[in-house]
Image 1: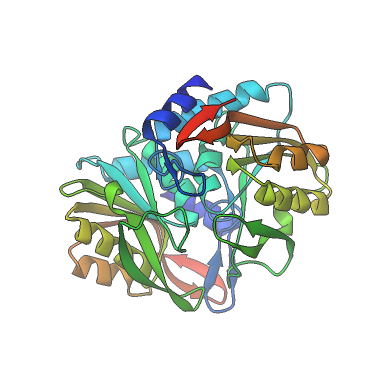
Image 2: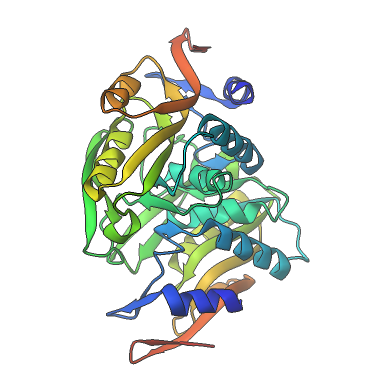
Length: 190
Length: 190
């Protein structure tokens, strides 16, 4: 997606440890008009599949998924929760996720009534790096006996193993921008 | 907002300790078509004010704020973050928030570049109870020297002190549904 690449180049920042910061439009401040274009692009990429529900994960996936849903006939968006809350039902599917940026492992949970057997689930997330968050979400989908029909990623770090891991699990992955490498602090797209 | 009240009565559940669960359409699974109606209603309530930016808080405010923004000329949405992440800039405004449902106090942070002096900020959140989250966000707005122009709440627990606290700080609060009390597990609206 050309406009996304432009935005990454113009507004993104590369920090030590090859961390790309796009918090000015994607995951801290959100450019909602642009996210509508992201939604349109995902619809185009996944135009051949029937989607019953979008699954994402706290926190930065939520706003993206909410806007994307509007391009998939307003299907419900479910977000996996990261913390144990008094408000969460006891009846949950649970999976483990290792976080690269937060350097810890945490559990994600979804209420069982929100992913049902046979439903077609599209996973949406902001980043794909090692694939840990997506793997956790696939685990939740599998526990429910639902069908994973695709994984839509805004920005993929192509030099990490995420895509290989997810495709190895049989998933179809569509990323709107793939970063091949960082060279002297500059971003090189695939 | 009549349709919201209907949805709360039809789809919400009241649990022990007067906890209202609306996770089937608002804060775990999200009904995106309905959230568009919520956005329209907030626009109507706040039609007299100029909004430069919407501020909300992780996690359940994010999806709501993203959709609401579309009714305020797609102004940027900024969400305050609850956890220390490697990806967060060092230059942040920070406030303390006590959580009723999670029984602990935590810090919320916003990158300084995302709330600027003189900007008109509309706060959006899913619930108002004791007002702790909104108070924390007002603190962030004040630190930045921005103008708080309103607080839009989807569901207010009218029997708790949140509104009094926020109005006492000079805020204008608009709630789309106000729960007066729970009576034998039933919801009574104001």
